[in-house]
Image (cartoon, rainbow, N blue to C red; front, side):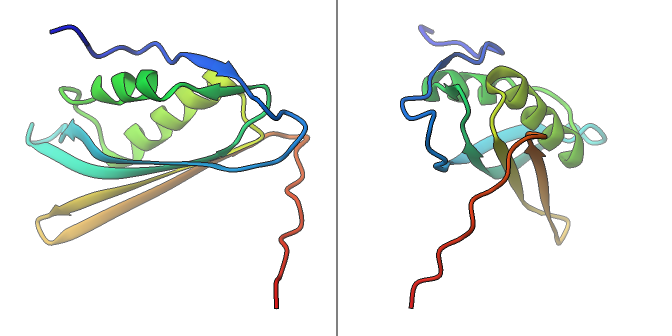
Length: 129
C-alpha cells in the first residue's frame, strides 16, 4: 500500500495571517473501536478553525485520522485527543471539533471540544438585513 496511516500532522504557512477567516473541514468516514466491546464506532467529524501562522495540510490530516481505525477510544477522549494534537500542530486562534457518532444501541453521541488562544478576540458578527 503506497499510503499508510501517520500521526505526523504536516502544516503550511497561513496565506492570510492578518485576516480572521474560518476553515471548515468535514470528515465523514472516521472510525475507531469501542474500548469496551472492540466493535467499530463510526462518526462524522466537523473541524472548524481560525488559523494563526499555520494551516493543517489535508492529506496529512486524512492519514492522521486514519490512525484511529484500530484504536480503542471513548468518544469524549478521542475528540479531545484529536483537538489537542491539531492545536499542538498549528496553534490556531480558535478551533472547534465536533464529533457526531452514529447510533449505537439506540443512542447517538455528539462531543464538542474547543480551543481558544488566550489573546484572541473573535470579530463581531455582521448582521445583514
